[in-house]
Amino acid sequence: MLWILGADAILHGLKGFTDNAFTRFLADQFEHKAWEGFAFYDLIFPLFVFIVGVSLVFSLRRALARDGRGGALRRVCRRSLLLYALGVFYYGGFAKEWPEIRLLGVLQRIALCYCVAGLCFSLFKPRTLAAITTGLLVGYWALLTWVPFPDVRPEPGGTQPVWRDTGFDHVEQLNLESTNRVRGVFLPGVNLAHYVDQRWLPGYKWDGTWDPEGLLSTLPAIGTCLLGVFAGLLLRDGRWRDGQKVLWLLGVGAVAVALGWLWHLQFPVIKKIWTSSYVLVAAGYSAWLLAGFYYVIEVWRWEKWAMPFVWIGMNPITVYVGSALVNYESVAQRLAGGSVAKWLDATLTPGAGEALLAILTLGIAVGFCRFLYRRNLFLRL
Image (cartoon, helix red, strand yellow):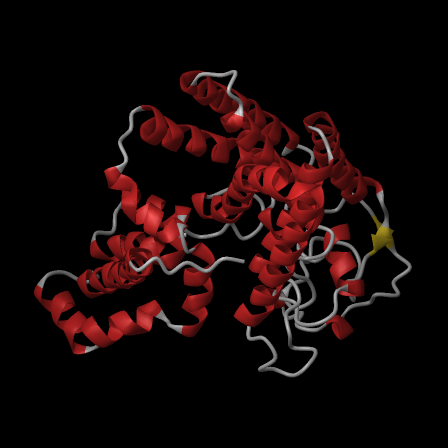
């Protein structure tokens, strides 16, 4: 959430302030890969889904003990529906007419992943959860590799991608009735996951004819959440000392990263269809980050430095949805935009104004989180 709220803009501003190989590398890490590959920015969303899995272990165990299985299942369904509704609201709600309403997006995907993972956690034992996770990842790979689908391009064949950047804004532009069948293809807009969106996903699609948070790709995203559940189970397991838990997270994370990049040779790491290899790579990096923070905060007890993260983490949905209503960057522009930014660029160095605006944007967002935290104002779903 820290990066989403504006910390990424600081690094982009740093590139403008001092342009060299290092600052360009940092800035590039805060841009999504256009298609194949992995940058740090491609970790933020799956890391959030992974942490949802970690946290539901703690919250649902309390609910199961207090309210029983029925109460826990009702809690999961209620929270999922509310989060899904917030997702629709975040993307404009019903301000636009149908079919310009986006039914699937970031919050909607989190809601679906939480719902399925929460139900599975409440109903099944860890061994069954492991089988479900494996089935989701292997099954998704098998579907995208072996199931044939129509080549929807007006001129079949070749390497032409199908997305908004290449002029495909509407499903009507596609040849959905094509008799030319392909399989095992992982091009933008020409793969089974995107074909399912093109054929059956109603409403607004983020990339013209398909959505990066589409229907079929939600299946491996649920696997990401379930992998977080296993990390949560490890943290809750009293049989292991804290140091051993950290080693387990580091070791399993290394295995996941290695397997993911090995799988990449046949099933590429692609965020926009959430490939199974992408799930493993992202989960491995997430486990490493969790291990690092757990060791510093829970083992070393270095806690005070992390308070800004606590302020944000106690109200992530509030702040995320609030960003659609209150543009933190526009507030920063009112304070130090226009002539102020130009004066800084001219007086100090080009890019100084942009850097200051980025710092102010993040400061306003974090300050808002601190305001909510200090007054015990928390949005509970």
